[in-house]
Length: 285
Image (cartoon, rainbow, N blue to C red; front, side, top):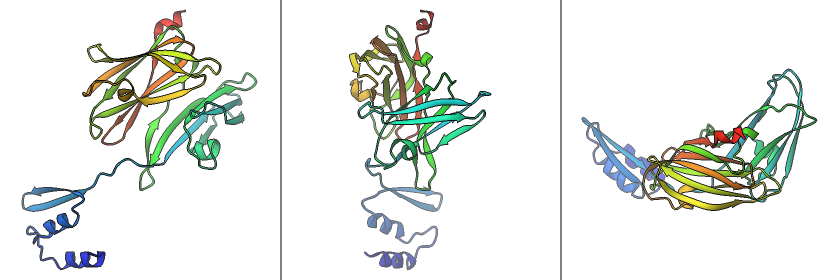
């Protein structure tokens, strides 16, 4: 049936609330490849039609802001390192960031990382120039919906004190995991070896609410400067049950290492970022 014939059929329908005149049956049959749900409220009949499509290509953007909270100008470099190969590609040189000034890069991908639009994922390293103080940093990743509005998550700017050093542990509490990809939550774990010259060896342990070990990797290696991110349930072969859990990251050698979890609601795709907190005992050494 062509679209004109469809509209003609709808217009000529003898339906009159609360009698739909068979129109809802016709629409449900016409859209047979969609899922139909009938909801009758008192004398009013309702038909909800929807179709869930599989995952496909999507656009993801990243934004970063540098804010100077000091009463002096700041000078620093922001180096971008793609996780694809771990080699520095871009060096954003900031000179004379004025007091109180915020520098916004709403789409840092196009303006700094990849003006050609090529896909990339990675991280920034902010370093001082000529002993200048460093700015406050805010960053986010986000998608665009059909109306042009954004949804995404704020990122965490790691300082030296936020990193896990050799021989110590870091903890991520409050992640959630579900075996059902349509409901519940999934969690991705991110690990960054900040040492540009040496490998880092880690032990990962997942604990359930009772503190029982449900999954472990004894020797996970990170290359120099490598950012590794993966679905923790898949990588550690966790039990196929709904579970609230905590992650323990132990740096056996190398580092320092930064860690985070991104827990995503499977229904809304709403993400929450949870940074790893280093063992307090490492600061007493």
